[in-house]
Length: 303
Ligand code: MN
Ligand code: MN
Image 1: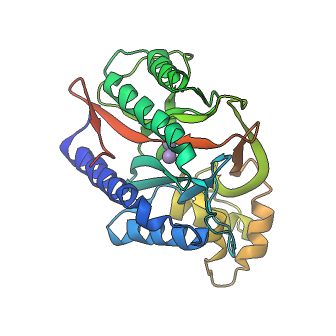
Image 2: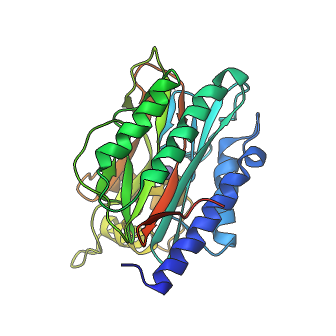
């Protein structure tokens, strides 16, 4: 169950996400550099008393998830594009996660509406004992009825303290086992693409977001382990941007060369490759974080 203090942390995290997402049309403008957007969003989070629960994600067109600017990113928002802004905030480890899609071509408006309507319908179902497959079924039905295709291998997720992907997955199609529980927190995130595309994502091979796989390591004092321990004490087991690591300065440590070695060790560092739609179809996303409280859905990231 959720006590008062924990509830306040979730509410505060959710409000910061909501206020940034409601400002998405000002933040995301054609011609603006992605790195400037990422940095603005991340500093807004900190200025409002939160911490990024993961790097600001900006995914354009067929890119579905896990893109954040690398250092020196020269890419700008293209005219006529479809842009997903996905923002996570934590207060003392209590995370809110939300996303919106901004559309610069009227022809894609219906695709965006399909994920927004799917999310609305799914949120109303978020009550104790509901099967996750029922949530997936409603998302799938709304998206299909509107003439589009859900992304089958991207899901929402349960959230726990300092744990972005905990326990249950919330599918975007009618699959999965498990039931929703009172007092738990879930991110619901319908993704859809055009009907003549494949409806799943694949890795692009690039990765700009990582996470520590291990807690502090002791007994070793080589540079790799030193950086590993610094990363863990900064980010715990939450995702971080490579950009953030390369901007660190640590006395007596050549951070960029040590990081280059450390990130190859998959036992210590988990990588999140950029995910693209398998048929290069355009992708829209909509996401809220919901706390099930006294049997009812409480939308933390809604205004
Ligand atoms: Mn998200
Ligand atoms: Mn999420």
